[in-house]
Image 1 (cartoon, helix red, strand yellow):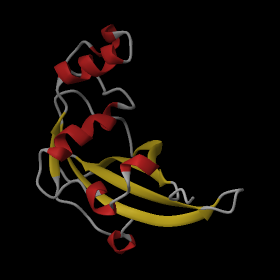
Image 2: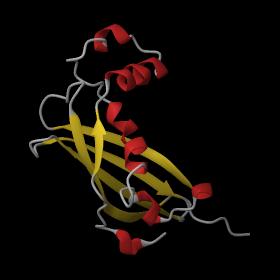
Image 3: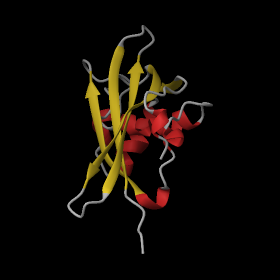
Image 4: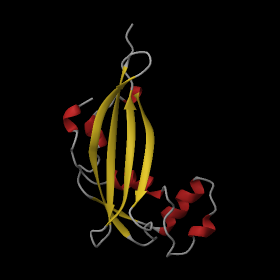
Length: 146
C-alpha cells in the first residue's frame, strides 16, 4: 500500500448518460426497464457505479491503481452515492474526477491492522455544477504470517 497517494486526483473523464447503457444496467440487475425507457428519465440511483468503464478509457483518471492494494488481500467494501439535487437525466453528459480522499487503518479483534481507502469521484454537468459524488471504500487485509 502506498500511503503517499492520499489526496491524489486523477484526470477528468467524460461519461455520457446513454439510454441504451442505462437499460442494460437495469436489465443486469433484473430490474423493470419501463421506468427508464424514455429519453428524459433520471438515471437509476446506482448507475454511476458504471463510471469505472469510462474512467478506465482516460489516461491517468483511475487513481485506485496508485493505491497499490494487493488484489489477493483486498475487497471493495462499500459504495456510497450522494446526489446534490435531482439525479442526472438520460442524454446528459457528466465529467467525473476521482481523488484518493482518505487512507486510514483500523485494528480488528485479532489485533491485526486493516488498511482502508476512500476514493471519491465527483460528477459535474456541462455547466460545472456538482451533480453527484460516489465514494468507493476498499479494505486491504494484513498479510498472513506463518
